[in-house]
Image (cartoon, rainbow over all chains, first blue to last red; front, side, top):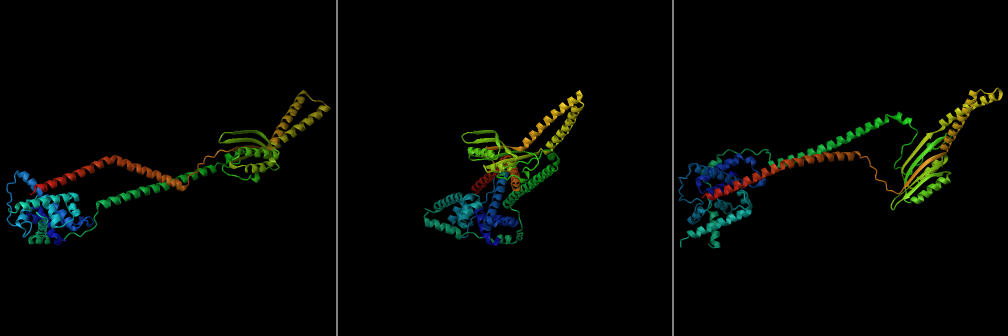
Length: 157
Length: 337
């Protein structure tokens, strides 16, 4: 199961974090959690892929919360990671699209990766995000509109 | 951006989607095997099972309680019957009386109560529901007269919807069986009571006393005719004659009483109120089980009323916390670039 859904979990976490190293760590942690909580998995409530995405989201949120607390403690986020020159969201992705995806927020990238890249349906995406399917549609529509605008802005006149 | 360009963008996102690095694959493959899935108590099925067990226990308690209650009442009823059976002496002291026979329509008069050679007093009371009050009253009077009896008293009253006729009849004892049989055909018998008192012993005692007095009177009369009586003997003779007259009168009264049976006949057009029937075993079981179920329902309702607001508040607090956490997560992801 891990082998089968490894790419999906990694892609999801990569889109949410925008950081390949962090995504790798969080993916490994997600699978650790999955193995520990395997007894809790209920196939009637969703597929293993959906369950793993939920776990990955929970893992990512835990990381973001911890990071937020750390930043508050240190009162400033002094060391901003410099954006990598290498493509993050896919090998061979056009630089314009790479930049446009990078410019989205984690919440926007999250819905894009679930609906567009992983091709989950609206119900499953809503189940992963813990929102209603209509809210998924709205969020996806806004994210894609923003992506289009950024792409148009990046096109040289 | 045109629609084809937009579609190309989406295709590119899918086609160029990143793959998990080999280092991650190795890390994941190095993870231990998951624990085999065994039995795990799930909240919702557990709650459903607990609710089903609680309902089953409640119904079971009602059934057991219902059965226990009905059998204990049965035992009490049997005990009461035994106690009543153990008291025959009191009943034997009373005159020979038949118990009333409610709702026994057209019960034939018991042949063993028919008058024989002994002097006996009959007191009959009958109540019958009739449709034609006037016709039934006339037939009763006609029957009484035909049998050699007479009407001692009569009370006939009607209003718009109902009517009653009370007849106090005297029927020759030798025809009382025939009279009762005839009266039972007037309508539906609602109650019937026949009391029989034996007068023979009293009459025999009076006869013996009268015979004694007459012997003494004859002796005193013979003495009076031969040697004459002393003043005391004259007083005794007069007293004996008075006693003989008094006893003879009593005897006549008793004999007359044994000649005519007193028949109280009440005819009515009123509908009889439905008689309260003692509940059967199943009815008692149903009542007891219903009582217990009702008490259980009250207890559950009470618990719901008392605990309901707290449970509701807790549920609302839980929902509010989940919504707050969801909003916080969304904000966190929005803020994360």
